[in-house]
Image (tube, rainbow, N blue to C red; front, side, top):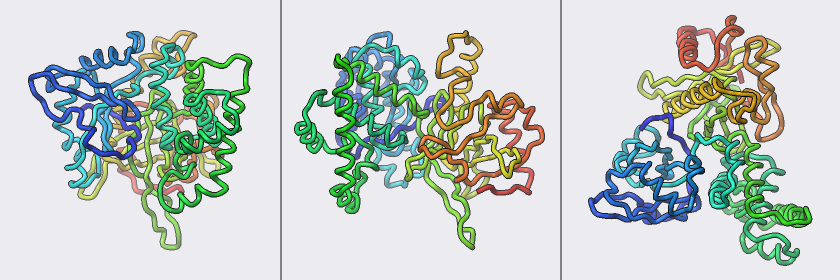
Length: 464
């Protein structure tokens, strides 16, 4: 499977595997196939010759079943997903044949044990296409399409895969409450409905105490739970009383998605990896930290799995990258991310190492997105797509115009928002490249050249 259209999204909640065998065997006669949507609802198809049917052929049947108009045919794509690995498929791929190769893919792209690999089984899912521009979503009028996008965005918010600040997740939670239960409920009915549905249905699990464990259960019964309920209902009341004319469901759905669009990693494919922790203590002991790496049409975002915040966010114009293979026993696949920084007032180049067996997939996806951007920018007019134009930038990053006049990539600024980069917490390799002001950016050739140069030298300093 090619890496330029492969990605990861958050796993579904753990449930029995028996219902997930959507393409378990191949026969020449018509066979039932389940194509799952986010949330475990499914489209039931009867497919002839499932062993050789392609994604493109399945797409027509699924769109017909879901009444998705032809104008929205590029919004979604097919994915093969399991708790261990999630891959977006190309139109030419044949899901059944890839399922037969699933264990090989798990050995190649995950660190899972033999036992877990033997028990893992993928399902065929219909999800948002990584390559569909966010700006085009706002032009969608079909309520069914908007609902599917909303369902997926909501799952990512609740799972904590889209880090966001309290005012954001509270506002989104209130919108979900209004979409599910309607507006205009009095205080008593709204409170009863919220307690029946539970906070975990509207707020991220790590916030609402739904992450599991006795401590979080006990804590959820205390003042924190009551405070969250009060704040959510307050936000719901604001929605109910705002405006003289109630908004249509499509307007509420678009409102939710527009808020999600403000998060720079909306629409990303997600990959798992690890980065080095800064050395601590007298003995300078270090370890590794689990991260999620989000890659979209806009850039690359490294997020702390445990703390649910962004460690590094870069547009493609602000980085160079490369992928290196293991050189010996015990070595790892590494995705190298190079960006501009500063130490003691001196401009430096910084290298972040991301250890992951999915580094090859990440590198391929970055390269493909860069090519798409280059092609789009080559044909830009004054009316630029917000996902491609040079003025578009994620929250928490300095504007590109200030840093690019001298040939350097824009520097990152540190802020308290979970959306903003925390470069000061990263263990990076820093060096000074006197030719930095003149080097071209985001090209694979130059990234590899500098990486070879880095490996040939031995007097590097670690920046903590």
